[in-house]
Length: 608
Ligand code: FES
Ligand code: MG
Image (cartoon, rainbow, N blue to C red; front, side):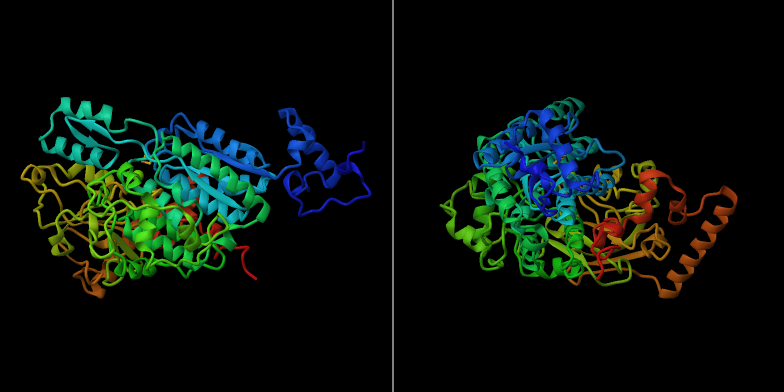
């Protein structure tokens, strides 16, 4: 029998499915299809298999990435789901980013990963894509790329690790990594303890087991409608993680048939739901940056979801989930208390239930149709508070929008403040000009600092320290830590791990490296005023004095430029090679998500 694919008198549909997509490689569409088929057949696929909807599975496994340790098993289960539903599953790799193995920072590579994801989804003939990821930067990178590619996508996260135990106390990465390290620095833990803890803090594969960035983004994916409701919390090593994977494959085939694409599925309401959940879980500050970047990719939502939206929703949303670092529990506890299904039921009065989800049903219908038996309120296992008796009344994450220090905004996780008095504070600045300066002087016993000082760290913003490191958790100077000081007001243009706590203002914009920055000209002894309630962050300097200092700085940097052939980083970025140069020239400020301008909806190529 003759194969109709090679019948030259029948044109090939340029918008066809499966292998028939984008047949332009060799000019002649019939020849391009012929070539594609002969090569893919070398993998052993039959004509029958190749006639099915093709579901791509993005594989981000790496032996450097323990958060993704279970991906081979998840891929098997997704394939089972796809193939039981009549599709053909084909997995392919993109880069893999783990927080500790992505120098200088994983954030530096997030945009690269989003480009990798977007371009590989575009390049290959897939009708829908399962995005498997989990570690902090992976899920946002995948969603950013997926929205820009705008083929049907569905997320599957690897799931949280199990908590460990030491000396009868439950522990887990990475809130307890930080707490215990701080105790070791302060001399209350010895070297035997800290060595033993190192063995137990990450006792299984999977993502960090607290409400860090990975868990936050997983919950947000559910709220956005990009992942099934059960997808966020099941442990990485659980059998339910595998059943979720199988059903993700089933949904992917349905998505391939319906061609429900992210630019259509996601609406303003999806993002409002995401921010409601972010506030209710006491989510990571990093998620604010990621959400801005994700919204910034969407052609009709970009510009309508801003830091102000995050703050406004926060004022009406209580913190309900009692997890570290804002509370006491671990992701497994959240999962056992009903996870996102229970939380969304609790939040129902606040949510936009008409928002669409990847199941093809609205969030409201999903909630109504998913069997749910809540834990009794009084059960000790219930770490999800009712709406009327929250853990924290509102505004777990706040955005500073007033005052002269952060005209582009700044973010703080107020619910993770350890000393709430610091939320309204006035103190003198102790300034570190960059991370190296801080590392060199923070433990100096001669450092002039008191518990009322405000620790200011400059030049760890997107351009100033490419990749915007998680160095915003400035440690308590050792001489104060030894006196029992556990929290101080700290400010920077950098980020902080979602697993960390303290009274810490982050993402100050414009960043210190920017010649127009106010943060960049703050000096030792300047008086800083933080009023979290009024969302004000101010340095007590006149506009004239700020202008004068900025001018002085420009002159100094120009002079240095003549003698040392090294201008300020802002100028120098035009002379940096490779990806680092691209990053430094193109990255936008934190309030826009630290994305590359040319990838955003406002960038080139998206206009009328
Ligand atoms: Fe991957 Fe924490 S290091 S989730
Ligand atoms: Mg992290």
